[in-house]
Length: 250
Image (tube, rainbow, N blue to C red):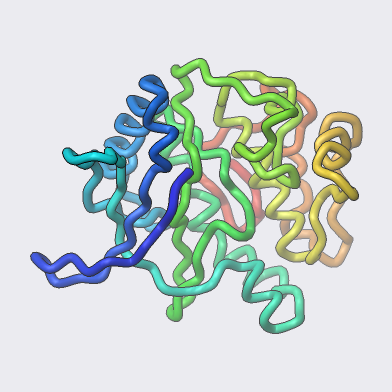
């Protein structure tokens, strides 16, 4: 969506992170309005798994840019932690640590925002093991009527993309529920739900193949994760929150 950088906010004397929307995207009036609306909603959300949004706006001088000012969160995403240690995160700690971040999309869903950017590289694990979602990518209002096609999988990383998302259906919370199930599979196993030599191959596997069962050694996440991977969006269990005890959407 844009380029993040780390300036210093001199008035409250704090380090912040600023994400700047690519100028070319502002040329689309509908996209610019959606950006403003969603920045406003995200700024109003209060959830322990979401980064605090301090401010948002658009520059008055040329070239005009839109921006979001957020709390600076120092840390590493779960996939980077695994890469650094050379080992898969143990199942129970992985699910407990990441639970707040996986619950975060539901706070956005209640405000008609569908992040659909749930993946192991998104949340940031801080030094205190607190996990925070710091990047919602290009979030979509469920009333905006935006569509996604198989030719544009960048809007939802291919490994975590829901079947109906590939078919171009409008953004709905079921997208995120599917991605949550994929993350619940990948974190304790160390392997993506589906792989392939090309993005299109991975996308087709999401459409054509049933989700893999978790190994028997990880019973905690199995049955509930399958609820999030129903083949049809309406079959995925609706959620008010994420239950880390069973890695499911209750």
